[in-house]
Image (tube, rainbow, N blue to C red):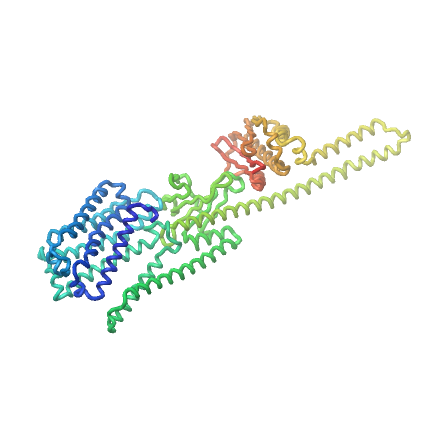
Length: 638
């Protein structure tokens, strides 16, 4: 029903009419074959039509499911030929009446059926079953998509169904034309007087059909044949087991009643009981699964550790043998963060260069386990902060496929875990920044106190004594020079203790950034490219945001100068406004220095601080000779 095309509706119709045929046979069969066979042939006419439709329906289900109707013109041609054969066969049944009446019994009708019609029908069903088996052996997986993997998983089930149906065809052939070829006498006509041999054939046919139904039901109620797109977490396998066990129990109960002298158990009542029992098991199982899922979610949310939460997700929800949560980005303080499951195995480095993006669904990649060290699926969790987070999963413990809802749960939980890691890393960086700030403040206070107490105050005290002892009461030139020198030293000290935030508010953010060339990059060649209207566009930023950006720019400039090598190369600085303030610092890397994958502690701290104000600082190496730092602050209105 997911496709909702003609082939899907025809397949559903085939299963529906097949169930009608079995129901029809079961209702009539409660009176015994000999009694039922004496009924007029008119009663059996719908069943005869279904016996013509069902083999063709099975052929259509197989060739449609594996895509042969669309990929191979030969099967499409055979589809039209077999459709035409059906129309002819049903027309013969409707028009040609060998007994000249519809009131003759089944045995009487069988006597008039010509050998040519029997042979044509046997050839027809043999071709349908054989072509279906041929498709199962011709199918080759074309890619690692979920649908192709599902078809490959379904092949063993469907082959078993195909071989069982082939056995049914052989038994029916012996039953229909065995007498004409001298293999066995006509058991159908002989069944009027001695039915046990005929019953033996019928029981063998029923056993093969039962095997086919069980195998097909096992496939339809598993993840494999439907690719997990519409099935719940537990799939329907357990429900199918419950149905089969219930059917066996009811059959045994009916057999016991028959032996005790109650042969006519009401079939519809048994069907009703089967329905209510299956519903009971389904509701009970869903309740248990919901309860278990709630417990797992509580463990994930309340574990207090990202590693523990990731372990609960992989073990209790996904049932994966191995997994990894990896963030690939340019954020300095988060570049090397990843989580692995299980934790007691050596961590493996996943090679992203081997993954080719899928054109239809780039967020989910199905992998070859042999090429990727046992990993079978790659899920893009989220694209944030100039980077991508990925969830990489190994095979399921039971060897099945991941259902679509399992992947969605994994993606949502992975997003929450990534944000938790961001918060954890940001918190660690801010704690370290706070300690550093306190230490710097303490050192600055000690230095100021030492200069004022040990140097300046004694000199001021000496000058006061000298001036007070001066009898003339005049301030000579020596005293004036001393006071001027003290004033100069105090002014210099105050400049060292100046408030950067106040300076930025007074002269502007961009001019403060340009001043850094004199203090930080005297020996470097800075090439500035500044938007002429940038000053007016940055006035609306709060003072604390401007100050954070100033220090982030200063640290980035220092980093670019440091990695330029002994011979200072050009450093290009571009400042512009594009839905926010954008700054790019690009420098060539010196020959004596090698590019590194992560920056120092300074960039980590400033990257975390910008993140608080929804900004970002990213570092990337476009090649082995060039490093680029990008700083971005969104618009204050956003």
